[in-house]
Image (cartoon, one colour):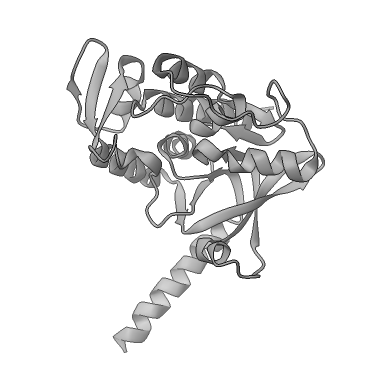
Length: 259
């Protein structure tokens, strides 16, 4: 019966996909534009990468543009990334370009998956695997399980590197510091929290603070801003894209070094 075949096809292929991703080169937590860009470049380099997003539709805050005006701004410095993703754009003012936020988000997701990244939506990362004073993977559960407060044990996914791309809350960095009593690579040794808006400084610093903040744990995008205490920047997304590419390049250099 076709009804059975529909269910069997979904179940069989889903669990095959999940089993293939129980051991990763890179686990990315959060499905925002920075993490998605990182996933694309990491997968394109041949690394095994999966992204876990708690929402039904990954893409983070880029979908909504500014106040649901679905347009975003990108500055000149990030246009090479825009062209890599084949997103339409139009020049606005000197050094600034306008793009449709829905097309931009959809294009980044599409290209990341077609490069070989796997996206798991409706997944929440509730903890990390912590061994030998380093982050070694993620602990995952269904988002509805956590939202309902159900006492259901999670699953574990090993990863050589974990990227915190959880945005303003920098949840993974905060969890690592709090649960393990360790100091992060910040001025205070903990998550500082983002500052109020300054577009220029925010865009510069989100890239500068994209880095490894504890062995095995990197931050990108707004998580990098929140961890290091730099300003937010609003609906200009060049820094997000450049942060994603930077974290990917650093990890690619680290994991593909030949003896």
